[in-house]
Amino acid sequence: VARRRFWNKTTSSSFGWIYFGSHNLSAAAWGYPLMDSPESGSVSIGSSVLGSRLRISNYELGLVLVVPPPQTTKGDIEKNLVFDNIILPFVVPAPKYKVNDRPATMQAMREACAVELEKQMAILVSGEEDLMNEDMIDDEDEDIIEATESATEEKEEDKLYAERLWSQVDSADS
Image (tube, rainbow, N blue to C red; front, side, top):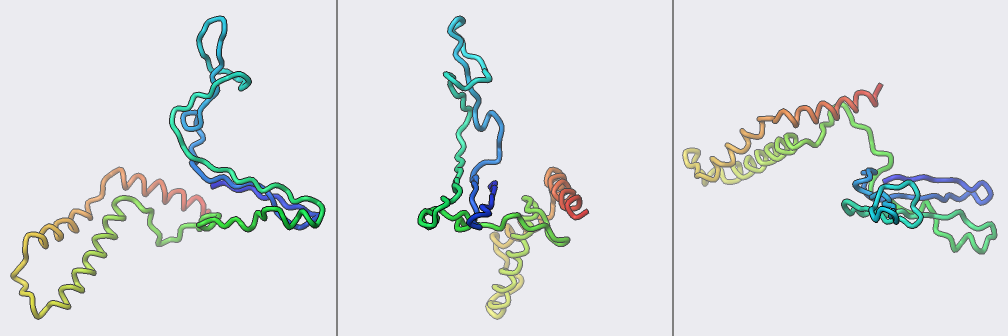
């Protein structure tokens, strides 16, 4: 999401634009103009978009909402879309990471699931303590225990990704 707001000093109202969509601003994502070359019969990349075609390599959805400046007469102001009435479903700008926050890597998600699974298992065990015997563990329980143990093995790429994210947090704090 990108947003640009302008203020009208006369009416004390805001106007501007909001973009929702992919942040991939490459030619592969958004396309590039192709010029028809009449003498050679071929198509080449050109700088002018007049009479050209657009080459699109993939399709991405993006929306631009434009809130025009309000009209100067009072009757027209009430009819205008108000920029501040467009509510985003998240906080802008994004909140800064705290010291105890961890990036949401695959390893972090596995560990969080393992912790939650252990909590749920503890609740089940404590509720059924009278009915269950510790010596009776079926195959499914063994698979769950093995899954929680494997969650502690972190892949090298997850470590590098987490270090890169934390370095961004450290540089933003300084």
